[in-house]
Image 1 (spheres, rainbow, N blue to C red):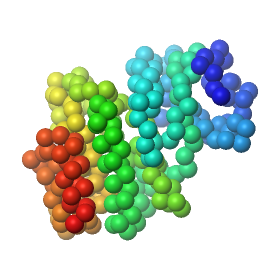
Image 2: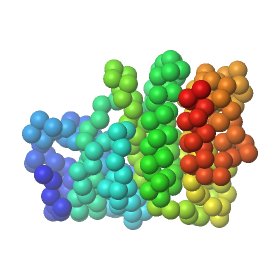
Image 3: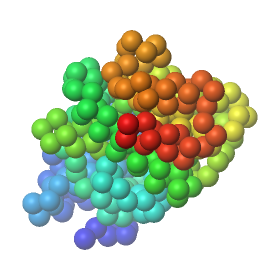
Image 4: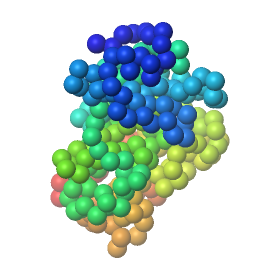
Length: 255
């Protein structure tokens, strides 16, 4: 229902076809996003923001990359994707709107859930990354702000995968984008390889943050001994691949 190209600014176009009920314009990235209701259905529209504000080319490239990922990968925790619109601000992506609280601001509330509820969310997150890894996508800038959680329905949603890349790559930044609580050592090292081993490390850190508030010591961890052993290995001696990590997690969680 959305066109492939518009001549108006994104906000003007969205106002002409529906009602904007939310604007997200304070993101560190410079992206500007909208919640819009069209014919009784809600959508989330993400743009690269004002092209006069730098670094616009990098933001636009990231949006296009996120569109490619969304077109290639479907999963229950990803909002349905409705395509890319070319606008005077560059590409805009259209997704279904998902209800939920950003865990960046509601992390303590999420951590107060039962260990079983948190583990179920982790299982969904890890399954998504198995699908992404199998499709060749490598993690980039994942942290608690990438997660929405609907506390009423237990629905996890993963968003903002703009910095995921198709295939292994080299760290060309030094200290990469992201929260240090989730990042792998190679994400701080210029020239280091970033691959699915990185994805495994970051996902293990996510498990430790959600089930132990980031602590690596066993007493803080609310999961099982077997699950702890998997996460501990993932952030110390490391697994050789994401699949190896995920297989170990599935085996530990079935005990």
